[in-house]
Length: 213
Image 1 (cartoon, rainbow, N blue to C red):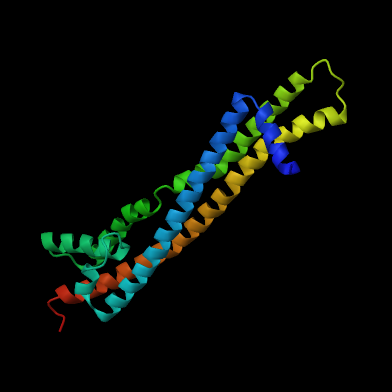
Image 2 (cartoon, helix red, strand yellow; image 1 turned 120 degrees about the vertical axis):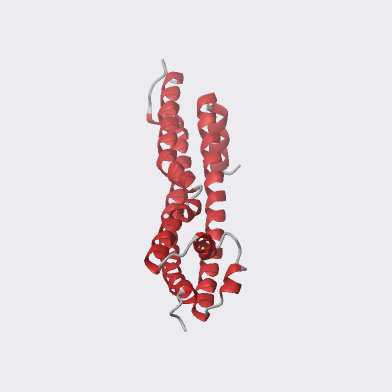
């Protein structure tokens, strides 16, 4: 039998319910964080592409095509917010730009949804794994009570207990990396959306300004 597989089997066989619960919790946290990472990066790539398309439509002055973009496109949401404001009353360019800047806050909040999962897993998984390791070492020492505490007798149980820490790091590291990359991508996306919003104000004000040709 493969030594690594025998280690895992031996660890699971000797683990008490607390250690097994810690292991199952960490595996669940890892699976959940990977699901969020894959979903979020698919969304970010899609929003980035939509924002670039929106920038091209604004540059061409094609408001009709801009309104046909998917509803979750950030610039399309800004266009809807501007349309609601202009439908209620006339607004000058500074007020319209301020309103669109305010409208970006809920858009960013929606884009950050479920990132708290990655932050939570990245910050808590190592401590959950450490808890499992400490508990495992305590359990191992209790089972060795009355026996000669030689290096060979202690190394096996302690090594098995350290598996919990390894699993905790395995769950935390991808979550932290995914969170940092997602935040950086969101920052670039927010900058692009803000730029589109400013150009959208110029376009809409040119359409509503009676002095416009």
